[in-house]
Length: 264
Ligand code: SF4
Ligand code: SF4
Ligand code: SF4
Image (cartoon, rainbow, N blue to C red; front, side):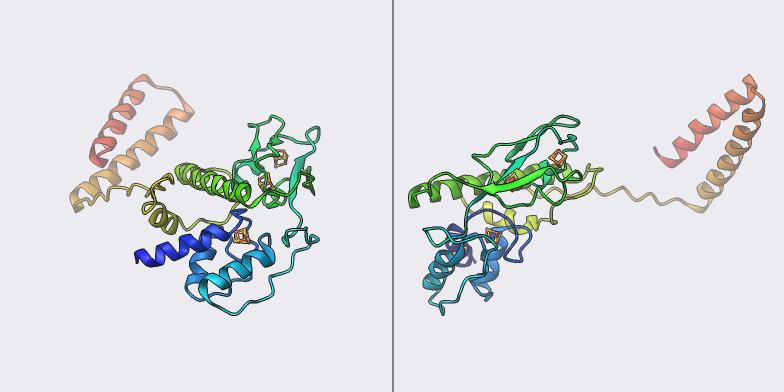
């Protein structure tokens, strides 16, 4: 098991950590790394391009395959053009949908306020674009010089940590979320298992929805509850027509009795 985790880790270290899902693994690079170990072809990382496909083929001693094509032209380092998202801030309505869609938390803003992209952190993964209801996010070429290998590794490590922190936060808010989910459901079990084995990565905790206690009632209590509910309904109906202090007191008593019997 540990050797499998270590191999997944080595493959994951080659992947760009864009977490874009273009390899078909919508919840990010780590699930793709795991799937490669299990036999999936290693040429599907679009932003990684040919250099990443070849590096993994070499590591695993597999046949070298042509990398999946990107819609962007190829840069001098053999990878597709790096892109960045820019929000047209005067058109943004502050709906916050792009924030939970961004896997590396590169967007700042809060409800009903203009949002902006921290361009240094943006990987151009495009995940914020479809959820934007007013279509005010553009993708532009990243005109910064290409990073050295050392810088790229540092950037990848940073993106990995940011993604894991993002998962941790999303996992915590998942149970209370009211709005739509704009990212794929994340296989938190895999991430939790992986991060628990490593030293310098924030450990991802699984949060389970607390189970509702199951209340079993005997037949006598069930009948009693039904009677009280009927009396409550009757009193509520009468009180909605004409107020009556005595009936209000009766209603109050019945509601207390109902709550007691239900164990609330
Ligand atoms: S960068 Fe995108 S395409 Fe490449 S492995 Fe990660 S999620 Fe998949
Ligand atoms: S800002 Fe948009 S394009 Fe940039 S990393 Fe976040 S989701 Fe991806
Ligand atoms: S999704 Fe679009 S409109 Fe909503 S906050 Fe983000 S940029 Fe603004």
